[in-house]
Amino acid sequence: MSPLSFSIPQRAVHWLMALFILFNLLFAESMEHVADALEDGVPPAADDLFGANLHAYVGISILALAILRLCLRFLQGVPEAPAVEPPALKIAAKITHGLLYLLFFAMPLSGIAAYYGGVEVAGFVHGGPMKLLMWILLVVHISGALVHQFYWKTEVLARMTHGVRKQV
Ligand code: HEM
Ligand code: HEM
Image (cartoon, rainbow, N blue to C red; front, side, top):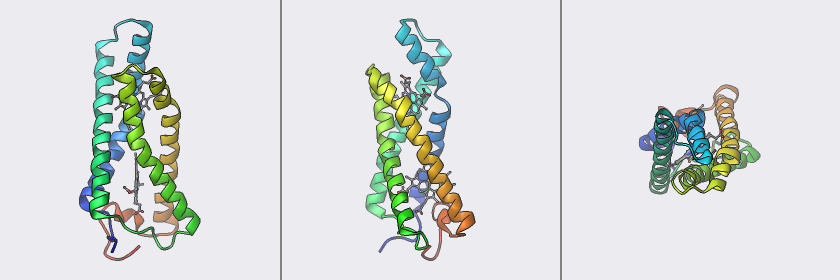
């Protein structure tokens, strides 16, 4: 039988990852400066290096949390898709979540290849198409959560916050 809510560790990982991902999406400027400096063959500024390393460590933590998240999903399961959701939107939610999971791995790994391996094409895909896809998925994902909360007035958000006692 599937659980009614996400487990407390699953909720903690969801919100911690959300925080880290938003941080890396919004604060990547130093990484850009360091990439440009290395391309031009000049030493990067110390504060840019600090910012770039922070971006890298936060990104690597996202990768570690993604592995933990998959293990928790495998061991504890996840709630069923909400009953009120029309079948087409159930599929849309599955695809959105699937692509987000793919990016949880692809973004850090391409970033690592670019930063530590000097693979330029990985840096291009990381900061171009992957960044764009991540933003699009997040807009769709957050809109979906808000539609559930305020339009359908379901308790879907509660499954990821304080938990629910009956099937949503
Ligand atoms: C960077 C930000 C975020 C990312 C990457 C993200 C990612 C995900 C993923 C992949 C799932 C699927 C659950 C799983 O299998 O682990 C999920 C579930 C969920 N997220 Fe987010 N999320 C983010 C931010 C948010 C925000 C801001 C909200 C609220 C407005 C939200 C609300 C939810 C809810 C309610 C669920 C549970 C859906 C259900 O019960 O079927 N998420 N999130
Ligand atoms: C999910 C995790 C990550 C997210 C969301 C993320 C996000 C971003 C964003 C938004 C940019 C700026 C792109 C632009 O506006 O042009 C960027 C650039 C970059 N990031 Fe990340 N990043 C993540 C993980 C990492 C990791 C783990 C590393 C390395 C260890 C890394 C290395 C880089 C590099 C080298 C660039 C510059 C790419 C270039 O322009 O050549 N990132 N990242």
